[in-house]
Length: 337
Image 1 (cartoon, rainbow, N blue to C red):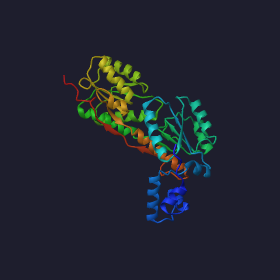
Image 2 (tube, rainbow, N blue to C red):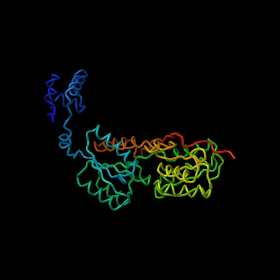
Image 3 (cartoon, rainbow, N blue to C red):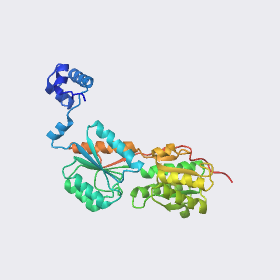
Image 4 (cartoon, rainbow, N blue to C red):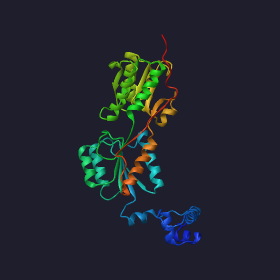
């Protein structure tokens, strides 16, 4: 392994003092624009990387950021995690990853473990966040950002997406194609995002002068299997011309349920999802879905956490990102009788 380039080597090559190099690399004032440019060019040429560990040690920090995900198997969480890792890599921070697996007690235990001086801040992806856990985070005064909380009004810095308008847009797409018998697969009922998405669906229908048939609305979890079972029942019992699902995995289950029932997608049944996981583009047909910017969610949450660690105040406690309708081949006008 090659020896690490030192600040003294950069200073000698650039013809300046080591203090000048240090100031430039840390963004401190004092050097002219020409000197800053020369130091940065030399640092890049030599492959110099600041000793972040030493800087963190001097600041009384560990250089570690903790992350607790709902689980480490869902593509949803992994896409957010990739965004977090990307942002922290640019900041030369290390990431310590844990999972709660939907267990409130385990979640609190993991947080207690991380708050013993092990990390400088913590990110939580879709946490359970019982009141006792929120009190623990406030008591420890540890910088924290919540990604996609179950309760949107949780009194902590948090990042969400526009669930309501996203689902309203996805439903409107089907209405514009001419669908009126539209079924809806709700997600897990203990999530406020589930309610917001359903309200977006309801309002799109209502504003188009269409009634929501309660027989075409069903609850299930965010899994492929649940989407397959529930869509099979709706198709065989009530025969909608389109299905909107509160998550991509449920929508992908609905596509296969249609095939199992002898229906072609999108000719005989249109399907819309929500998430835009990688599987959505890889499915056959490609899934029309509402895109959550999962990678950006991870990046922006990590960026906000780093700002809190540096002692900065966030402009907004609640950060909300836009969603986007991605039209692929799982939607088409309904068959005319």
